[in-house]
Amino acid sequence: MKLESELISLTKQYGGDYGINHSKRILNIIDTIGKNYSFDSEVVRISVYLHDWGGYSPWKKDGIDHVERSVEVAREYLVDKIVDKKKIEHIIECIANHHNGKKDKSIEAQLISDADGIDYIGTIGIVREFSTKPRELRKAFESSQARMEKVKQNICIKESRIIVEERIERMKRIFTQLIEETDNIF
Image (cartoon, rainbow, N blue to C red; front, side, top):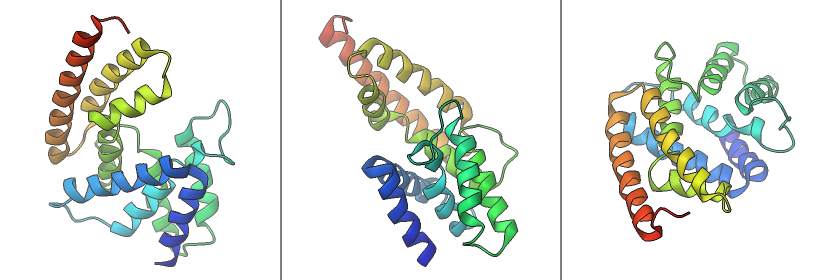
């Protein structure tokens, strides 16, 4: 699909390795958690590549949440790319809901929000959190722990809960090791 190739290229350009790899991980997670569901894979793929664009240059705006900004950017971008306005609105719904645990959203939005949350926990979640606070290890530790609980509460799909529980257990083991190795001084 030409549009998907363009989205991949632009996500890499604007989001760098972080942006494209985050999107790829989300799609891999959706392949796992979405096996037992019927969903529009085109809507999912387009939404995943666009979901964080509002947090990347040149679109990021101080004081505006990246989700809100991503909705604006995606709407502007898609208007000339997709003729079917219902499909555009479906994509926008997925982007707008990618950080919440509301159950009253499409299966595509549920898959994306679950997969996005899963990508913030486990070993990758710890690495992501600590890389944003390399000189504030205690804050990174605390925010990683808080994120575990938030993701757990926001999960919509049964298959996601299994992965979340496994990743949370992995995080707890890593945190226990961190505390032991540092005598809780970090």
